[in-house]
Image (cartoon, rainbow, N blue to C red):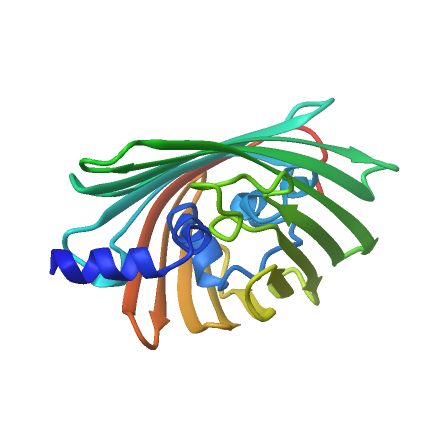
Length: 274
């Protein structure tokens, strides 16, 4: 089994592995389609400008086993804070075991402009890879993003990930420049849909679609699909007061099922209430 999972992760671009580890049950349940959002706090992992559109402080922890591989464990922490001048976020992820281990830290800053219709943001990323009996790797990346509120309930966002194109063993293709474009359409207070397109320098464009629906005041269900590779997903968000339990399932047709579990806490900031 160790040979199998090492082959899987060595055959994947590092960006794909890092995107998997730096995620949560909400993002994965929407198949990574929330490039534009004022509802999914962890979406700043895809677009740094998202935190500027939020009105709650959030803190969440997640755990999952990639594709059900028992030897691999992954966990992450994603948080954000709202102030009257600038919003910020901090995310940390870890994936691997005693042979292979990768870590990632993201520091986010964002701000709303034009009476909170236009939002800008920046992520600073630290990537770290540790392989037993090999030299450790540490590189820095940078993301930039914007988001614009076209109408109430209609947001459009654009981001560039790894804007500085960090080199991994002198190879750009491992952490390529990635462009994301997306929209959030809130038809009602209960139903929201997401559409995004992702393109990097080495692979075909990936179209992602997702939706979320509040069944009642404490249960939200969500689902999504990614066109390349084809990965459908489903999940739920069970909230009671300021505590929520999150779960999602992603199915990769070649590699199998990944279950995501999360626990999150949310508190109104007192700013920018909708």
